Image (cartoon, rainbow, N blue to C red):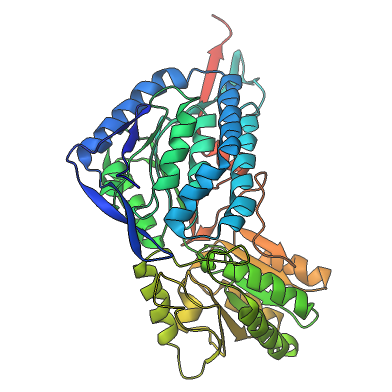
Length: 473
């Protein structure tokens, strides 16, 4: 692959200072291309293009925006093979799973937000002060700066750009420095149906992202990334009173009670824990099991781990970790396993080529262990024994993260109590990880704030204006 270029004002452009960084194939560890490391001058160009485009894009009708997004969705579907190739080159993901699980969801989400563009709701106009009529306008915010992660590069790009554009905003998006390929292709496809400057993509590293956030033009900053990155973005944005949307880390608890179906729970947990190599903020990697089910569940999870195929072939559930640093992070956390814990399955790198890590199960963990408290972001499922429902809920909520959770039980009352008491943005019952475009995704505490997907995610990209008319004039 030749050197990539930024996508600004409807065309590809070289970085101003000509700086590039190598792109590494995670499946092989070898260089397969290069991408710009954009500086302040590149960010200036993209912001200027987005600001120019906003002047006219904000005044397009919802029907026009819907039409554009529907055409983009059709084009994404038509060029699926190209997008899947680009995504797999960046991530090493198994091609079959990317085709079946990610591309269709992206198309569906584009079509959902196309419809959302025409469904803004609000209070009816009324006379709340005698002789005056008040009503509320929902308007686009302006230029939106967006930063996406490396675990789902093209899907997260859709989650960001689709609601922003549907609401009448323009976008400057920075993909992760390790995974820009599919995002740039997505921008090229979208650019066939959007006016120049509505969607711009600048590649780069952490400093590029900092320049994006610090720039005076954007009125909103949206990031999906680590807690550290979210804190830095929120701090930088505060200096200019920018609106901030944060989707950060997770440490999803999986509460399994004595009356749960052990086989079904193990199957669901393994799928949701190992999918995408566990590189998912909602991954089912922290199991809390009551005594009556604990031992059988650990044994079933061990069998699931041993049966889980890793690689890039058609039968693989997951591919490599995304980069060498992530492999070192996961390896380090497992290598620091406390003495009271037991490595039940996996716990090692696979091969010496690429960044593959074995499906892993660890039992005997305690609430204050590093593996119980910190996000692993790898194919590692931990199991912690809890005495009863009360202890399960205390342990589940006893972390800094609050993005997603699940409860496995045949008792409806217990499921409803858990749904109420779990301090997480999503609670699944007898399942874990499914998402739909119509429902919101987002967390609390150190998992951030704001919602992706759904009408709530769409409204996050609008601002509210009160208009009052004196009826006596």
